[in-house]
Structures are given as C-alpha cells and as structure tokens.
Length: 343
Image (cartoon, rainbow, N blue to C red; front, side, top):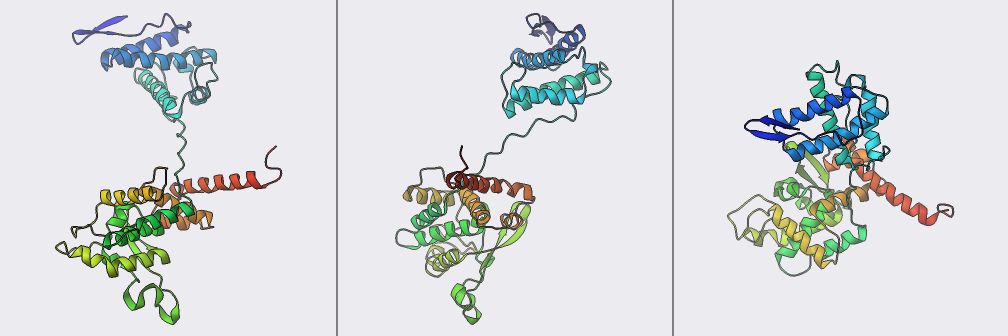
C-alpha cells in the first residue's frame, strides 16, 4: 500500500501476510501505520518495525478475545508486557530495553486511537515497562585495595606521596573523583594542627575529616581513616610545597607538577597506573573505589543509612544496591560452608 505525501510515496506495510485479525483491530492498526508513515513522515523501515511490534500485540489481543481497541483494558496491556518478556505467546522473549520499545509502540497506538475518537479511553497511559535489572557495581576485595594503594606510593619524590594520598582518600571517604580533586587544603580538618592524627588530647588519635561538595553543591563532612590521614600528612608535610613552588599559588589540596589543581583526567591516570603496577586485571575506575568503600562498610556491619549519608546519596534506594552485593557474598559463603546448602 503506497500513499502519496509531500511529493513522495511512503509505503505502509501490508497486513495481508499476518494471521487474520478481527476487522476492527485490523482497520485500527492500518490507520495508525498510515498515520506514522504519512502524517509523521517516519521511514519505511521504522514503520515496518512498528508493524512487527503492533502486529504481535494485535494477535495477542485477538487470542485473548479482544476484537477491537475499545475492548482493551489496562490489565490487558499489563499482561502483554509480561507475555513478551517471557515469550509465552510463542514469540521471542524480549529484553527489558526491547520490552520498553514494544510498550512504547503500544502506548502510541492507544494514544492515537483515543485522540481520534476510536476509543473512549486510553488503557495504556499508566502502564510502564519493567525496569532493567541494575548491574551490580564491581568492588575490589580488601586485599586488592591494599595492593592498589601500595602500588600508588612506589618511587621517590613528591608525586608518589601525592598519588598515595589521593587514592587513600578516595577509598577512605568514598568520595567521587570530582569531589576529591575539588578539595582545598582548608577542607581537610584535624590532621596537622595540635599534633595531627597521633597527637590528640590524652593520647587519643585525632579524628580527621574532609568537607566534600557533591551534586547540587551539597556539602557533607566525612571522616578520614588513619591510613588516609597518615598518607595525607606525609603529602602535606613533604610533597605539596615542592609541587606548589612550580605554580602561582592555589588553595587546591592536590596539585600537579605545574603547581595547579590536579584534574580529574590526571587523577584517573594515577589510578590506572597504580592498578597496572598492582597487577589488577579487571577494569578499575575511580568509581570502583567508591563501590568498594560502600561494599566493605556494609559487609562490616554498617547501617545502610549511614553509608547513604557518607556517599551523599539523596535517597537510600540508591545505596541499597550495595546490599545486593553483600547478600551475594553471603550466599557464596553459605553455599560453600553449609553441609546442606547444595543438593
């Protein structure tokens, strides 16, 4: 079927090769495909893709006793989403992204039919595709983190001291790379004044902290562990001044060899070089240390809302993905250790 539009022909796929549909369904589908090709000017290939998706939907409606779009309710649309995800209609099961695409076509058809007055309601308007399974973040083991941090501090001069302090702070605070390279010296508290981490009152180690500025310029204060405090002290006492001497003066905490603030790209390179020296074969990014920070805290018994606060997440649901990681670890230990875990 070819229809002239804007000086050229748009071919709307013919439904004659598909299993017979009730006349009302077939006519409604043909009208919508013509609308896509003529009024919206979609390409023949795009219209063909709609035809495949909506033809499958129309056949599903037919097999469930629906003879026209006005017979379709919201539950019918919801059931179709389940059908295509599972492939229970004999078609190929669809991935979450393909299911979302198929549902978008269905929603468009119902929206068009309702706007044209073909149907009295739009049953698909409130139906949403299932969320794609969130990929669990990769976390290093505690031993791998130790190897990585040790590898960052190898060599002589101020740069290894800076690199070790940078990576120690990333892991100690769970900060984003942009937050850590954005720190100024004044954002670090309780390290050098009055004796630093070894010289608090009554011999109690001083609890250092940093002020991180996250998304939306929201500020949070995060404790700094003893290893990161020692690395930061070594950097501030022995390395920052030589690096700063090459520049014009900046309040930035971490400096490059020109005396300017260390960039995110340079910090990334520091991490990549340390991972290579440590012999870590998997992909390691600054976010890997953030993932490892959260996973190790939860595995050690930290409350998820405390971790949420430390990470600067607006919602605890964002943080809860890390609990899935620790549950997987628990399952592995259980399967390996319990005498009746495996049948």
